[in-house]
Length: 137
Image (cartoon, rainbow, N blue to C red; front, side):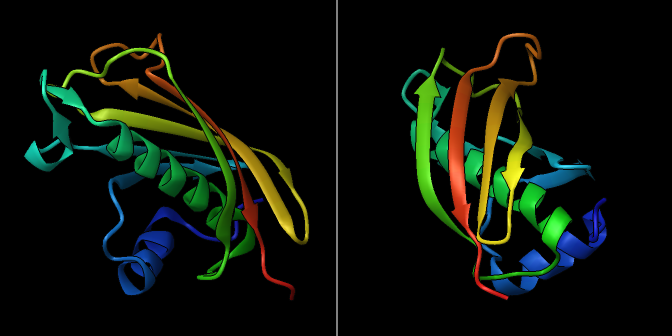
């Protein structure tokens, strides 16, 4: 069961993490979807979306999925991160992240994120698995 809405999470992030990338499209039971409008600052030669952009965006998407489940917690932090770049993402289209939590415990959250180009929502461009350390309550 989600404990925060999209609007509540956006407001919370505006206060504690205003430099984040993307906007939240939806949150649900153990999942979140985000979209990033690709701008010049996200590009590498090609023009393709840069790896650091896609990694950071995936990380934020997993954080949003966790916040939707546990509520506003600024100190939930990435504890590990594994990224596979599967193919290039054209800089001409938005990118979309689908984050899914695999485990959410009292001290640890583990999930995966698939990032897609809006031009092709079938084949992911990035696959991430990551863990989040959750503060003791």
